[in-house]
Image (cartoon, rainbow, N blue to C red):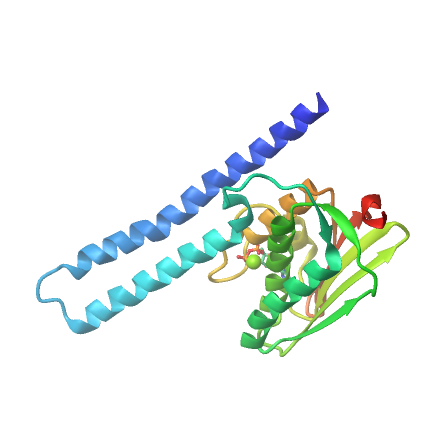
Amino acid sequence: MQEEAVHGEKMRIVSEMAASVAHEIRNPLTAVRGFIQLMGVPHLAPSKLKFYQEISLEELDRAQVIISDYLAIAKPEPEKDELIPLKDEVQYVSQVLLTIANYNDVKIEVTLQDEQMFIHGDRNKLRQSLINIGKNAIEAMSKSGGVLEIGLKEQSHKILITMRDNGVGMTKEQISRLGTPYFSTKEKGTGLGTMVSFSLIRAMKGKITITSEVGKGTEFEISFSADPRGLL
Ligand code: ADP
Ligand code: MG
């Protein structure tokens, strides 16, 4: 009975996400279609042509961002249930984030406890969740030459992954809207990244705690109970 409930909840999340991806991708595609049609108008001024081309490329890029924010869910691979070595995973995610950080003039400081730690779940989904949260942290600092601190440690049978930024921060109202679809304060935001991250982390029985102060920065703490099988 309980398994059925979990399955039902998963199906609900997946179908909600599929519906919103379809909706979000349709807009840029419709726009691009329109512009390609306009490009076919006879005797079009070269400046107009260039303009239509630029907007089309921007819209296609936007569609790509939407897809990559959703990647973990959109991937048609069966759900995996593996033992995830967290130290390796957090190191990998830090490398991926470093390329985005360099581009935004942000530094990354990684502090990992020496021992390997394990949780139980889907490695790709964990990656996607952490990358979405880290990307937001970097984007929150992009104008201030900030520092993203990434941490991993085990503390009284809990494993804690932290991502702390010294960026714009959030109000209580903004924090409460995190994880709901389409909440974004960014001009080109999708408002999908945290929704995907939160549902994936919850599916892996992780807990998310957010501490934030406007003008000071934000900390995301993701906690899991340590998988005893990792100790064998
Ligand atoms: P997007 O990044 O496309 O806006 P997300 O779902 O990833 O969508 O994030 C939603 C919103 O949450 C962001 O627009 C931003 O306002 C807020 N947010 C998330 N993480 C942070 C952070 N680390 N610092 C400040 N604001 C954040
Ligand atoms: Mg985002």
